[in-house]
Length: 356
Image 1 (cartoon, one colour):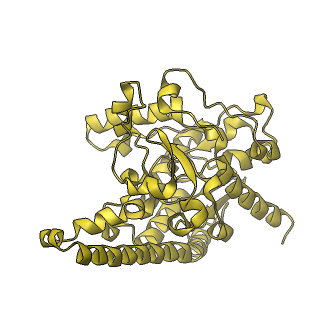
Image 2 (spheres, helix red, strand yellow):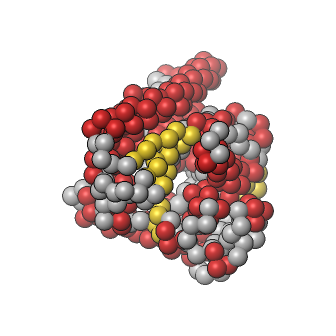
């Protein structure tokens, strides 16, 4: 896998153009003419609220990501679409960094803006780990909230789509088993490049909110980039990757003078957090099939003239990942991980074609 610093990318010293790689070769996208990126859909005005500063800052981050940091040619959706022979200009990415399931309606709006209200032949809906990310476990998306948001977003899609003779198939992928990022030895011991050294994912997370300023970094832009693009997953998802820090914050000041009791209390709180994360994942995974069945029945009754059909891909919940499937922040998936999801989706699509 490529290992390139943000500083090199922004200075034009490195490129994120996909290199020849087994997953790319296996999906027949090694031909440069097929590696043109998909269309990444921009946010709609209603997503920014009433704050002009939010608009400026969010557009800055999105622009930097699209121009320098994102590689949509590595996404599972792009790989799966290419395998089916779909042209790049017919592949739309409405997703966004850090999105939770509650944003599904706004992402649907982006598609409608591009297609004038006509749904594509195939629509894939997939939310990964962000609903588990919050300042505390109490603020993570609840299971009931997850299913309600998913149902509301899919109904919004049906309600606002134009009726067409061509059928649309909407595929909802089940939630990944994100908990394996926290306990699998091959993931915890996986080495990445951060803080100017090779460091395991486990040790990376222990540094919590520590910024990436180290003596080996020569460029002054790192001081800024360290805050905008932090190297540590604890910054973007403390409930998964900074549990000890969160637990310590719940300790009273008197615990400072009782280190042994504090250590035991922190250990117990972290175990409780891990259990809560596992419960949320089970709730997310257990609600998807029922939501899809309800929405399908609702569509047939309420909008029989709309040729929209819903399918649930449960197999993504069963995917197993290793350290080699993770990006340099030990949180997001790299090309190997995206390849696994694409294979799962294609297997499901092929089974439908074969009538299995």
